[in-house]
Amino acid sequence: MTVERMFDEYGHFKRFQACLYFAAVFQATSCGIHYLASVFLVETPNFVCSVPGNITDVLYGNITGSSLESVFPVIKPAGGPLVVRTSEGEQWELSRCRSALRINPQDFTYDYYGNKTMKDCSGNFVYDHTEVHSSIVTDWDLVCEKEWLAKLCQPTFMLGVLVGALLFGDIADRIGRVKILMITSLCQFALGVAVAFSLNYYFFVVLRFLLAMASSGYLVVVFVYVTEFTGSKVRTWTSMHIHAAFAVGIMVVALTGYLVRVWWIYQIILSICTSPFLLFCWKFPETPFYLMAKGRYQEAQALLDTIARFNGLECRLKAEDLLEPMKSENGKTLLEKEEGERPAQPEKKLSILDLFCSWRMAGRTCTVWAIWFIGSLGYYVFSLGSVNLGGNQYVNLFLAGECQIKNNFNYTLSISILKQDVNDDIFLVPGYTQEIDSLAIALSMIGKFAVAIAFGLIYLYTCELYPTVIRTLAVGSGSMMCRVGSIVAPFCVYLVDVWVYLPQLIVGILAFAIGVLTLLLPETLGEPLPTTLEEAESLGSNPRKKNSSPGNKDAGDGMELNQHEAKA
Image (cartoon, rainbow, N blue to C red):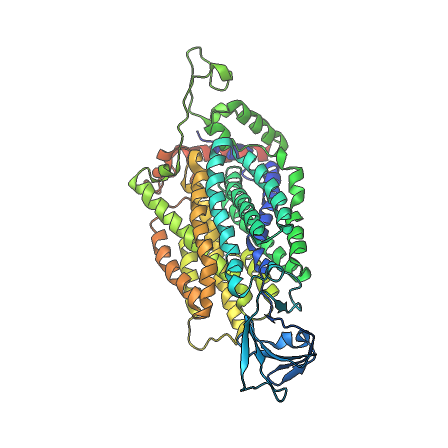
């Protein structure tokens, strides 16, 4: 007998599970929002050094104007300097991080071969507000010698995601899934709004770090929560659709970024998008797998009765039916015993080291961690790099989210990663240049399509590979490795300055190697969720003996019961 029997009795995905599922997935949208919000929070518009006095004339090559604003839209970062003349008659050559005062110029021309006095900007800049009205870069002058601070924002956020995944994953296995879902949801709302009122860059980074911990904690725990509330027949697509909600969050970021060009208003709007979830998350029940694993049988029985009534079924399943028959000396079952009468059984404290309890489990854990790493690296290289593909950056990011929603859920994990490698290598075919914007965007969407499949399946696969007592910690530790990839991803994207296709080449090579290793992992499709480390280790040891296994006999009994109900 296993907890999986409840799905055969009460349905794999009926009204009770559906209500919980869609509510939990709705909040997962906020994780996609906060993960990608920095794309426009730290956006750097065109800028040059400012000059003392009022500008009356501007030259940029053959283009003339009367103000910097009239010339900014045609300025290229790698182009020459702007030449301006002030009301005092001074002529300045303005570039991004320095300015030059011309000495005794004769005429106002773009080319000048006389003497110049070079000066630093000293923190005085003029920004192009055509596209970006306000960002943390323009408000706190995070350019030139402070440019590294702006580039540090996303890696710092991902470091918080790493810490939160491991921390909340471990805590959820100790105190329960529901408490963590409530705490992290409340923190996402409160910290998200607080970020908008950051007094300076350092407050901003600290608050975003804490926000990252909360977002990561929710995303890790909600996957386990959904997995433990849905049956094996629907577990794959329910897990994948959580990533669809994450992708909706990315699309919300693109749409909000297009409509709102002031960073703190943009941040507030993003933070309140999923706030209605706070009104009903406190009604969420604990999962039956967790209750049974912790010996809370009376609570498990109450939950089973609630599920049956909500689904319109008879309350015929008992919690003790999900356990091996155990009788005490006076004939009472464990369920009939009061809390004080139960024999004291010290609970074993499991840690991350238990993921390496044997050579077989250690090999699986290392392979799974590697998949988490490359999945995250590829995902964020495509997502963060989509705004650099040419064309409209808001449309590019929106398409990146839309592409993820349209994933083909029928691919296996290894095929998805290998396909990602093929798509990455397409970028390297000679003749493809940056000028072919539409082709570059299309190939990027194909690569994002493939990596999102693998990235989505690894969450579900990790849940199915590890037992209940350490499942959330396993997902959390995998997510920790995932965040190592997401920390590296922004720096990988910056390698476009070395060669425009270098990020895709790196992801492609790693994807090919890890895709081959994936073939060594056991298949979990149709297998019941393991409850002990021994059951988890035995996965894949006896393939194709399903017809005679007790688990399948129970499943068959459940199907017969369902058929009997249908006839009635």
